Image (tube, rainbow, N blue to C red; front, side, top):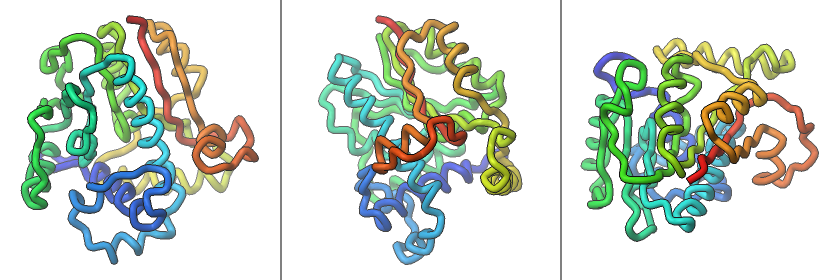
Length: 269
């Protein structure tokens, strides 16, 4: 991202979430604040109809993540950390009593979000706090102090980090016993059939063109080994086939279809 400027990909993700509320009526993921916080005319969002595949992946990853979050709260977790929060709205529709939410993002993106909240009249609940961090140059351990286990919501961030940036963040999470994280990752375009690879490479070129290139890819066995090496004992990894079966009633997608994944990993208490 450009120095002093909010993340353009954060805006893009928010736009997909908002468009899902209008085009599919939030059938996969309900977010009553998605359109409001974005501040884009509904007519403009309706023009995003052809971009359905990415829109539905983003809806599914949020549904998976917030289902896992709700289960963690039922088990007693009382802290939610939204890493790379962008225009995520969980903190402002948090229905869980006694659960505090800490939004962590680049200071420029946080300033943009606070401006959007003010412009739309959305209140900031007392349960919400903000921590400004540049994931590539600052340590979470130096900026984020937690009181017990936490649920880390880390969506739309990992592909844009360097390997070192990812390692530093996941190592911080792994040092908080009893915690849980949900993040998404991408498999390398080299694993894709020619047609899908071309589409993915075209998207990669677009985000690189706005200064936010994809830097890190994982294969399922690779990320599983890394997480278990850090002490995570419960891992649920949904790739294209598993997401299609769970959220879209599509059990026909081949199990080894490469693409975007959403992963939940938990540490023992």
